[in-house]
Length: 629
Image (cartoon, rainbow, N blue to C red; front, side):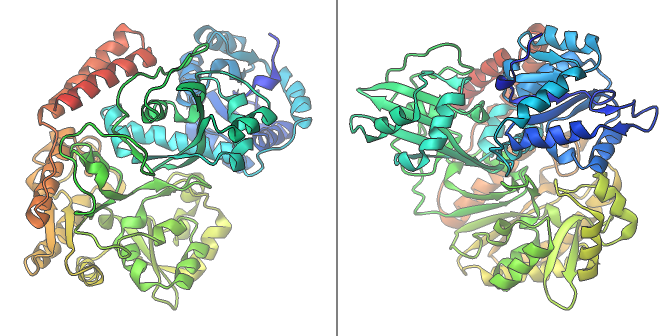
């Protein structure tokens, strides 16, 4: 098969006797240096690398890390199942087309099977590698900062997070998607021109023009032009779309494939008043003359009306919801929850690190007690700390109510910089990163790393400067909550969500074995404190979670009914403390959720896993159900 190297956006590698010599499960493999360098060069040119291998994931991850190239791969598919379906799913999860993907494998059976499942996929044996090296050596290294790689790392984390939700609509509402339309296009002409030339799957007009022609469009006052920026709790997508509207007809209307599934194209189309649009060729998502998706929030005051009959004046009520991303699911059951401010677990832009310790009490206290130099010192010392997490809004603005989850307190380890008052929290208290016996497991990724790259040198340096002081003690947590209340406006109500006090039998490994006991110790202190002040309100999960059926996969993850009950508690507290009424979606919505999951299983079987058809049907049904509620 002839390979068009110019079309390649993704290279999928087999490992044994392809990326390296030998079979890793049978013998010590021999690295192929030119392949290792090729992966680095491809990345520098904006071409992504992935893996599809029949192997043990742990063995391959350890070896790739040892070779210094693990960080260059995304969406690795390593198990013992057939490669054809895996390659197809991998490409779909990355929102790419098979036409732009090259799969390299030494086994013709694997190649032909992959080709059967993805007809337009480019396939080749390892002999193609020298030609690929020659091709890439003549290309300019246009992405030495690895922006495209990091974008796909964000997408990888996002796909994992999406799997925790029972429906895609709930996931979208929880993602806190924000969209901004900017009209001063000229300063971003190069990026917009790149989008015009490269986008296909969501390029509705497919009108390719030269750079000079594009600038003339910007200068022509008869055009209404705008570029679109999007961010959500996972990170910043940057400039992902462009339109040029003239005489109520869209001459250009296009979006990056990174936005597939977010509803961005429909949102912009609705914002523009659903103008005339002639679609050329195929697109993966059609737009309709209807209202904008409710799960997208405008970053600026664009002209759009939300179809919700109980709109709340955001100037009257300010609510901050701060906690793990699981708490965000409760927000999907509250109408107009887009009026709230959120600080959820997020993924930072540069290295795609998962940032979730921002709601730990030592970091919340640090927001107010540490000066800018001390905060910068923590950022310099701790690879798992992002500057944004030390710059939260909790004490910068006045809120009527702040809703804070306590669940992270029961297991995170706390470290103090020697000779100072500075404290940080990270990972499980059972496996301190200052203890050499656990270092190898952090380096290999056996223990939770938050997508941070722990090295032996770093762990040694951190241990020299920081000491482990354990997990949060009940008396320390009580003192921190008292401090937080004094730091806040005296009219602010702090609402804490208390953890479950009996074990989840579905998962009791490592620090989950006694998590319920830690919850109980912390809860007892907080219940006592709440009796002494009316500014502290509690949402006690022990009043809601009754048995094992209420858990999903661990003690902190619950079924839809539990999140719905939390939402009811939240709206009740808002009504009690502020007099403002927020409506909840009907309880019928939960049963629709459950029913849809069963329907989805049946559809997957009937439609043979046609994800596109299933997704369209699910969204249509779910949207109708939400609207009727």
